[in-house]
Length: 240
Image (cartoon, rainbow, N blue to C red; front, side, top):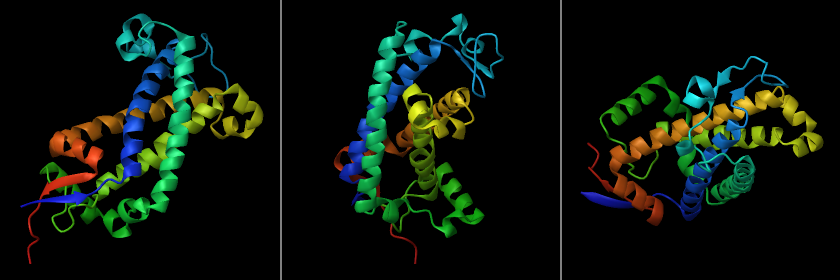
């Protein structure tokens, strides 16, 4: 038997699609900005003669990210910065509005709250086995999010995206003047730049896993649910 459940509220759906475009543009423009000095350091300062912990040239011929990964595809630092900062505003204010909306409609409390019993080794292992068997929904509560989803979304929403935002602010000369403590919080301007890059890699990893699971769970059904809010699930009555 197939059942239709209302899973994604309007605020979640709007934020999802706005973020899909925003993060795509920010990753591409961010890689173009990194091409201006394709090395990363820890601390306050970093220059050509300093020893970096990461070089783009170690991964890509020519020492820079190729055009098929960057926005724009040809070297244009000014345009990349303009787009990056514009979409950064959308990312930051979008996250704030989504968080307020999710508190008001109780999305966080009702759907995303991680309970202590869900973090026990037995519960986590059972959820891993269900994923391994491509069973992503609880027959007793088809609309519920499983604990691995909750953990992944919590890391993305409360750790990775805020880290990208605040490390980005720490790299801004204007914010350095207004909030000098922010750059100190991250251990220096170059450390903030490195953490910004690492958080971006974390978001890319989240996106890859997210898209893989959406595909395995049924891409058409999952994408439709993020448009209409309703998810269609093959539902079996739980065993007595």
